[in-house]
Image (cartoon, rainbow, N blue to C red):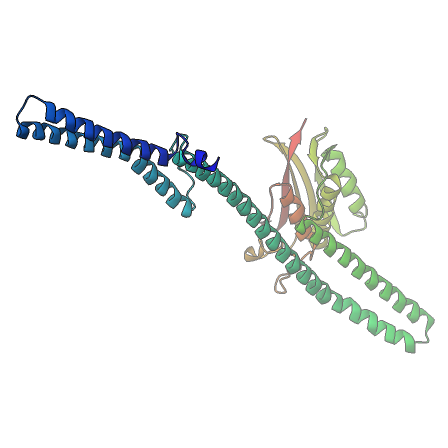
Length: 358
């Protein structure tokens, strides 16, 4: 059974054996015929020599076509595969060993190419995971450093008043010390909560949940809550709002954070008796919001830095918002919304835009 497979009619070995036998038979028969020709011995030998040369050239052509060329093609394909070039599959066909080898090479090339693509995909994912892990570690370290730094002042105050509380017999002072300690504790709690929220937004741990709502009524509600004491406050409040509903599609709770931080930031920095102005208008399919506070401007070189968390310029009279503006920037950036800040002649204006939906 094994010998019959080795000597199958389509095998290279069988073809060579048949070709050699046929060639030998042709040589013998042609020589006999040549000697029987009605020519002289020299002429007959010359004719047989020409026939022999033609036979050799024919055999060489056939050997090149059926053996040399397939071998060269197989070698070339194998060399390309060794260099991880799978762009040119082997074109050798047939039922012999060369054809089967070509099929095997092409199959191996497809499997290798598929394996390499899967490996590249896995490597890219691994690189992303490593980068994400590195980023998270840096964020955790930065968060821990920031919390540690920001906690020093309130903790110092709490400790000082706690020590004073131990030695103080005056009832009113003890109550005052307790209130200060509670206020500082609440400030620390708010700071930690804000930091954790900002960190979650930055790392993608929290996602936005957009919804459709009327932004005009939404702004009136938020501003009314934050500026309800404007009669007592030393400022002049102005509004420029549309009288009809304008709908947007965005995260309502996060946009409330944005408005809270921008309006409170403006309220904190408006000069005594100065103007705090809220504007809302439509233009080119977008709803534009701005809040202006009359007062100290921001140094021009610091305009891009105020969005960085905990950034403060001790030389500037404009009071930094700590984490508030960093959260504003993060929320608006996550939604791809345009936002910014600019100095006017006598104050500062913050702004952002939201696409209008029907």
